Length: 178
Image 1 (cartoon, one colour):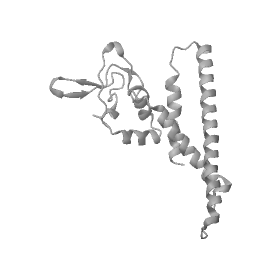
Image 2: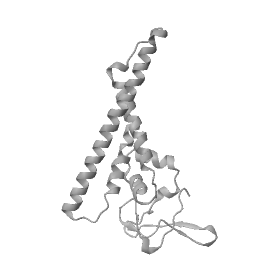
Image 3: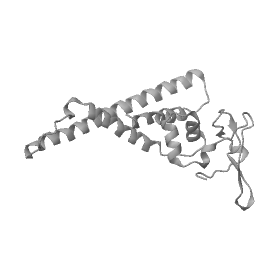
Image 4: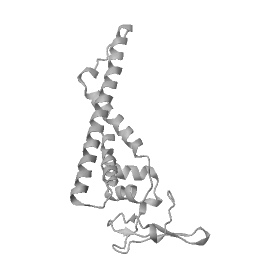
């Protein structure tokens, strides 16, 4: 299995990826290494089929915006490297802006030593687009975090807003396609 997790009933924080209802465990671990995947008591389906899947398959399903993949990543795993996704998405956004920037297109003519200036300008334009993307990214998440905190105070919700922010971050996987 890709991720081995066992948990007591007191730490009940798993979620069925099909219906979104709470689950006590993802699988039962019997003696001698025998493992049985748990079924949801509400919908009757497997609680989390992704515990047997390779992370590449999970990433592809998340890139295809499958709700089950998001629930697996947000609720049933303990991934603490969301900042790595943020950096990767930032570079994808930078590259998209850089390629579509008017000064980045050049002809296929024979290049000479004089073109060093042109390539240096291209490199600096990439850095500029990186800074623009970083400012947009940081502004978006700061504003979103502030709005969610205000919403949490107004609605007196006990829900943790970190999962919402992680979900929005993961939804940026579409930038890979661009």
